[in-house]
Image (cartoon, rainbow over all chains, first blue to last red):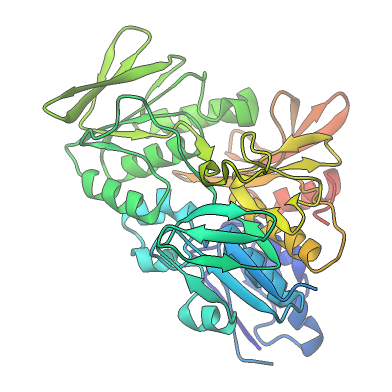
Amino acid sequence: MKVSVDEDRCCGAGSCVLAAPDVFDQRDEDGVVVLLAPEPAGHLHGAVREAADVCPAAAITLSGTA
Amino acid sequence: MTSHVLVVGAAAAGLSTAEALRRKGYTGGLTLLGDEPHHPYDRPPLSKQVLSGAWEPERARLRDDGVLAALDARFVLGDPAVALDVANRAVTTASGLTLRADAVVLATGVRPRTLPDQAGLAGVHVLRTLDDALALRADLRPPARLVVVGDGVLGAEVAATARGLGVETALAGPQAAPLAAQLGPLASGLLADLHAGHGVRLRLGSAVLGLTSRDGRVTGVRLDAGDVLPADVVVVALGSIPNTDWLAGSGLELDNGVVCDARCRAAEGVYAVGDVARWHHEDLGVALRLENRTNATEQAGAVADNILGTDRAYVPVPYFWTDQFDARLQVHGVPSGADVSVVDGDVEARRFVARYERDGRVVGVLGWNMPKQTRQHRARLLAPIR
């Protein structure tokens, strides 16, 4: 699984950090998403899928099947 | 056992429900019925990036074709639902289709409230759909004079975007400051300063009586203070009406939305989600209907769980955000009518987090240009999301 984020779309809600704190963080200054793990380990995939689905700005895109 | 789910409404709440079902392991049939011809798109950018022209409409799409294909759902678009047979869980569409399912999810959203005299008048807009945004964008060119009617989130965002385009803009509404009811005097006062500082003419504290026109085109907005604000373009942003007309006669209880229990269930096998759903919030002890983007996804998760047999009450901490000029506001909980204190940052620097208390209890957290810190304070001060 590969994760990409669109910083322009990000609204700083932090939903992704709540769903998958090992994969996402936010910048201190403006709250924009920081991608900690672009290719997260398998045990994190469920949480990452949830983070992508619940992002209120649809700023997270997943690719790859695993 | 549920082997087919029909979602009526193909915007954020409907799509999120379908995605949540799949994420939680549902492998049965899935149909999304939408009244607009467009694939699911996002609404928050409509009053900002799409309206300003910074984004082409395509960019507001919620998911690309590949992601939608992977959802393995049937999309029936451009065909509004016209009737629901609750006992048989069957929906009839305008084109004459009948769609049956084991579970039906009502996600038909809301439509804008309008002024009685705006119908058919050129230059008058509402902003709910992508097509609305594009029509308004075409009219927002200097030297057009814009009057925004409505001092809530949408009205204030439209005014900010229009000023950014160099359009002469006035904002009219009954409150003392934009978003005063949602934010209280401190933050709404700062918003008023922000708008005035960017050249928005604030005509607040006065109700709008109606419009003036000549030869079928709007010419102004009449205030109860007695004067008329001249206008070439008017945006009416006076709130919304739940899209439940098509459910009249279905037997469902309709009262400012589809009335649901704490599980977002309107009847056996029938659920409601998003802007149209009025459900019983168990923690707050009230019937609540939230019109915001995060509610669409969070409530979708609860509805998916309940469809799949996990008994789950939906008890969110309400949350919305708004971007106006250089201000990014995050609002958790229900901060209105409460005592406010700044807990982080600095109001003078326009970068702070405020805590709202009522009867000694924290009821809200508001952030102004401090999103990360706001989330952290919210986690400490308010109940967790789940």
